[in-house]
Image (cartoon, rainbow over all chains, first blue to last red; front, side, top):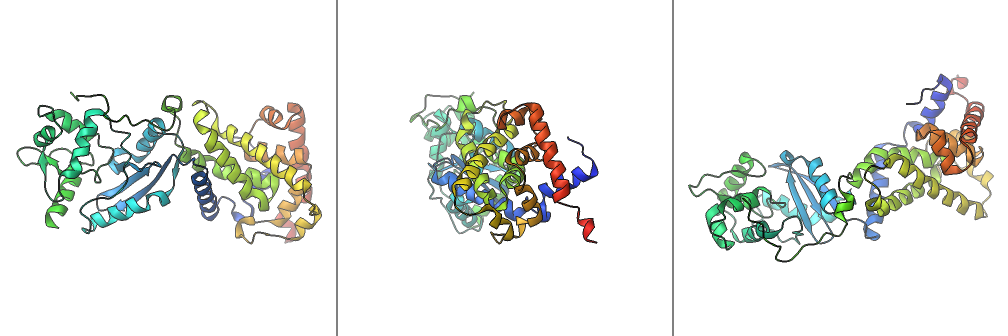
Length: 210
Length: 181
């Protein structure tokens, strides 16, 4: 960095933070909100995101103009998930909670036991081919019930693709909303989960109790 | 293992993902460089126009971002855009009929607490435009004089002189607060 004599340092520090502010949280919030509004008006808000605190930890929610495109658990590393969205959808990614109000409300209701199905526009672009066919079947597994990986494979039209069903669930870009947690092992044990086994236990236990 | 088939309905992305690969989400630029850009435009334009210039800078940057090379220096790129937006504002103000010397009589015009120190804005506003730019781009944005010269025109030496003359004047016109004791 540039080094200064005391008098220059005094001036630079005054320029940087006159009145002890200038980069304070209120200024940053005001400017950010205006950027989000302007970007929306100009059609430049390709990916909007926010986080949501839930009993399953902090969830990252991201939406394109088409709909919800990503739900991610903290264990998936939110920064890495945002980078993947920048690479695969668009680098025009902004923290813009407004577009996710409805999704956040429905998730709050779900975790409070007051919602059994999600009614949200979904953007499926991060899931392709057979994986997408598998995921498209999952919302038909009713709240509080489960299916085995083999049953899902059969429902998706490929009864022998049991391991591919596991892969589809492990790479589900929309967990919770697309309920891959309702897919369990044939012996009834819960099996793996994108948010961790403890979260799968939590969700299934919550649904069973409701 | 995974039996990939052609997509049933091909979900095409809205942006050229190949071109953009590896570039950070735009939000990271706002967080990392937003405060610096605000300090720069506030020093060049004063507090009343800083919000507008900042907003136009970041909206223009957001628009152009997918086409920016992944290895570009985003900080210098943002300062370049901020410079152009600030020049637009300065040219626009020059065409307005409001007398400039009336402005310093109205501290904190926007009524916001972070508009800060009217003495400093008065001292900066009194500098020639080139000096104000050179001071802001060098001392607040950290741009080398060579890059400042590329932005404002003129030689590297002229940019260095402009920053040095600007700081010399500010030392005189914006005295240290200890003098008030």
